Image 1 (cartoon, one colour):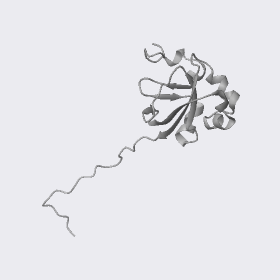
Image 2 (image 1 turned 90 degrees about the vertical axis):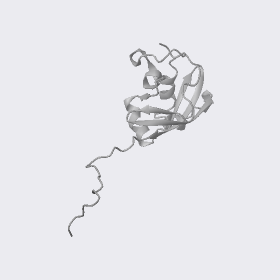
Image 3 (image 1 turned 45 degrees about the vertical axis):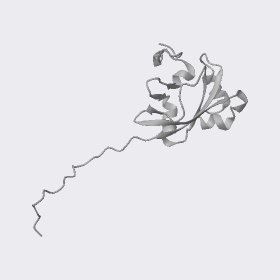
Image 4 (image 1 turned 120 degrees about the vertical axis):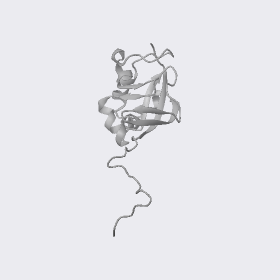
Length: 140
């Protein structure tokens, strides 16, 4: 299946930026290992993508590891908008590093996706909290 509305391509078939950051139609986001920690820490809060059309929607949540990514905005931008600051904010060393990877793929439209990481809910641990039975009192 392809990115053009027929479902996601298998990760093994992807190259370049599509392999580094794959926004799955199944509701999950996969980042390259080198970016994951920064996303979870909140250091990486945006991504520049070159697509034919947006693959994510504002306000939607996408799985990432044990947590989720919530999309804050999807904004069309141009090449002049890709600054060194934006490249670093996206987890890259600079504009050339970002463009070497981002230019792979069929799309011609550039989108700036802003997001934040939502950690997984804490699971209850420890013993169960049971209420004492009515009628039984502890001796004091």
